Length: 164
Image (cartoon, rainbow, N blue to C red; front, side, top):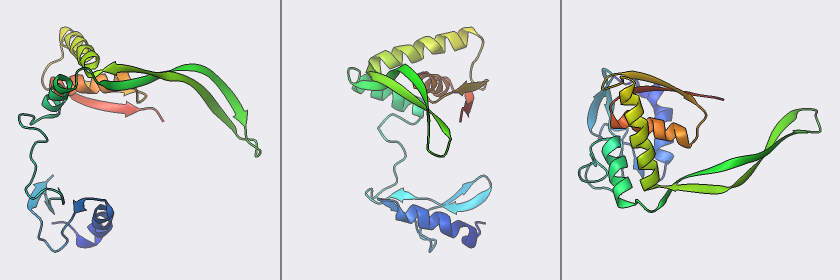
């Protein structure tokens, strides 16, 4: 059972979000997650529960694939090259790294989908398959998102480690 006192700040936070409705009077749809009872949260703009964002897209992999088909020529992932690094000192003596970046270079949905397919082929060739486990250790960057999509595509459990 969910402790109402511990979840009240969570409910207040969700209620303050635009377009979200959380019922604290048990008027929401009852759900069980991780062995505990809870209540479903839904977007107030929809009258019925949305199970899939697009017809025929029950998983993140399907949604990605459909997006790539629908928007194949649109820009999707933008990256910027590092031009220069320098260290600057503040008045209190702390040093900060300042970076100068170039213009964005964009890959289209079609190009990113090709990268995902190529990466997936390599992962499969290495012997990974459904229920395999993979650790991804990376800064948040375009290649990280590509690796994540490969995991969704082949139902590989991914553990993501981000650098701080």
